[in-house]
Length: 144
Image 1: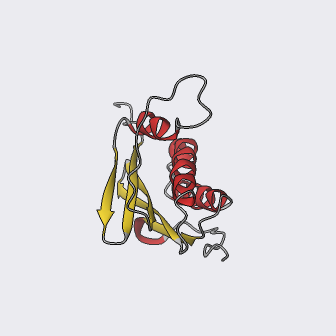
Image 2: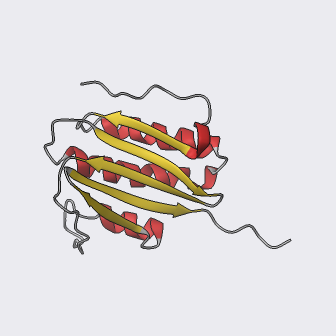
């Protein structure tokens, strides 16, 4: 299966961008491109780095589920200062925020998502899977 996402050079229309991606580790790169293009198109450059880290973690976790169909990666412009990055997969296994020790080789991803979003992330269980979402906010403009 190949990624169903074309490189976007135009800003996404109507405040939403979406891609269907295979359950493969290399899908994280396509997910990062989607997020980067959307955020730059919305002139939210200050969220690009955090958005790429978040979607890498969420897509990476989805790729590990063993599902056979495509995961859906979505970036929605919720408000002028907030975006929601979501990854839907076919597994109902819930992600778990753990306190990975300094010697752990994995397990820090959701802690990073939690930190970057200020705790504004969550999971919605669906009939055939789940959607993990993370809300990123840009800083309020300085008072004039």
